[in-house]
Image (tube, rainbow, N blue to C red; front, side, top):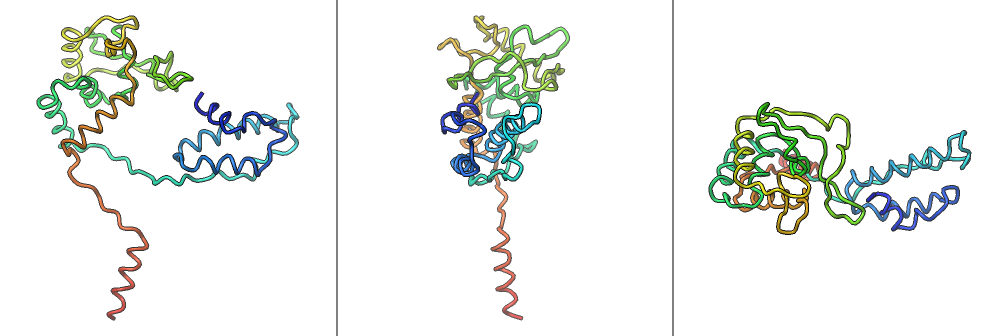
Length: 245
């Protein structure tokens, strides 16, 4: 829905496929280069599929597919390196959540993420019926997603078939969930384990992830950053060194 809205907002969606020019496509994609490569790829893929459909001889909507020679533009955003917490960093973070941040409103969700490997969107979408304390399993069948107005809602299925699965709880995840259900869970209209009872709505993934990142920075969980020297700097350093020989 977001991709369709982006195509429509930029005016491209109102132009007949057979009337679209390469210049219009270039102008459209140039306006997206401030977004990430993954976001650009999603939009590129959708538009390309549309032109592929229209150029199919069975449909005969267009004679020539301009996407055959149209290259996907690259993002101007700096690529961020994704790193995982080390074992020591995770242990320290768990200790902080159980002490200094024991009253953090998202403490249980963050701990469950670390103990189970589940995505936050999957955790926030868990219902009481998804958890079996007898068999010590969690059924994952849906995530938190967003509607056309960008508001968080409970999805009806996972993105892919492999996303729907049942996982076995670790001892830590079992004790954590049992504690929450017994002592903190409040019944709600959607039977969600984690729910914003004050505002009567689901908890968005971004809200918890923002809090997670805030705590990582606040307590300096990640102690060191790898310094990457650019190739240009390395060449300059070698050049300077060679001047002495």
